[in-house]
Image (tube, rainbow, N blue to C red):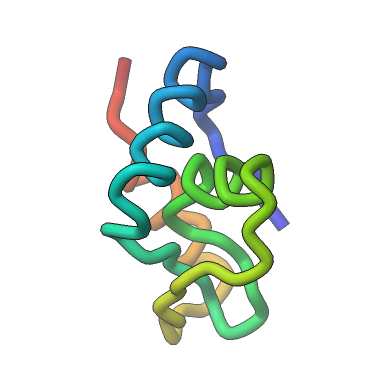
Length: 78
């Protein structure tokens, strides 16, 4: 299972956790049927660090190769 190709700096994670604490969930995590995260890696990490035990998800019907391509394509360059 691939990991996110982008690393999230601590200041970004702190801002995300603050936003999630203040506004709640505004964007679900995208996963495949076998639970591979294809979008929302930082949101999931922030949720785990905040102690969340459940998160909203949308399950995509994608084969592994397409899911990996989506993970890469979904990340901004830079």
